[in-house]
Length: 205
Image (tube, helix red, strand yellow):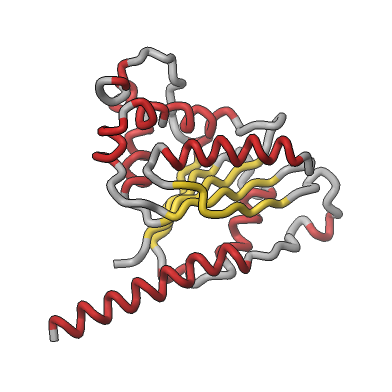
């Protein structure tokens, strides 16, 4: 069974910097070795959290009426989770932020969190930003880590593309990025899965 990558895509632009950042990453690993699911937050129907407190004793009632149920299923079955997003006005775009806010139900209800996300995942934050303000970056990472804690995991690593407001046109289709650190996490885990599969196969023989 292939390891699964689930991506929460937070950009409204299909050919923007965030998409280019992802495509550059895809070119660095053997995508045939993974099952990939990309969830475009701009194409999903997500009701905003209204702080009704019902998640303190159960699951969010909106889970049955919008697309968050799909997101929960895809993240629960994933081995890797990636938040891929641009930064708008020092924060997350509204559709992605709505998703993040709804995961408050798993922060409020630890037993529901453990029941839904029984396995720890490797989690990554890919974001693009016109600015380089470390205070903004810190806030973005803090929110991401809180989100990943809601799925029984933590932020593994971050990939940042800065200066998108001033990138020369010639560089907009070929982003000068160093993916090595991120790729290493996937290669190591992929080899581990391969070795475990071989061990099981040898035992069956």
